[in-house]
Length: 114
Image (cartoon, rainbow, N blue to C red; front, side, top):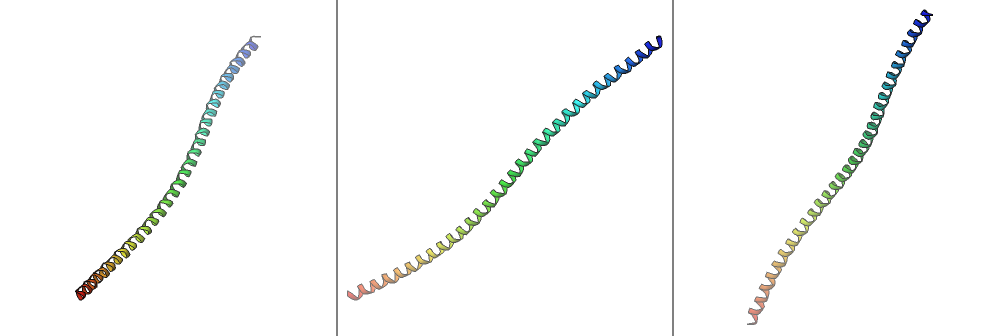
């Protein structure tokens, strides 16, 4: 009986140790699950952030492309404007010369009539 009692006590102690180890393993498993969930959440957020960055990058590239196009259009417009201003100045010079000649002819006619 004493042997059985001793063996029973030993088995109870072993069972208690197994129970404590089981509780420790459950706590570790819970901690690991929480860590896994946190990492998965971070991964999901990282994916969202990456997607947002890709969208931003695509938007930035589109804005840069449009900016370049507008600059090219502005440059071409300024070139045409310069050409038109040169043509206008040339036309004004011709008109001024024609007016001088016309004025001289009018004076000649007036002098001839007098």
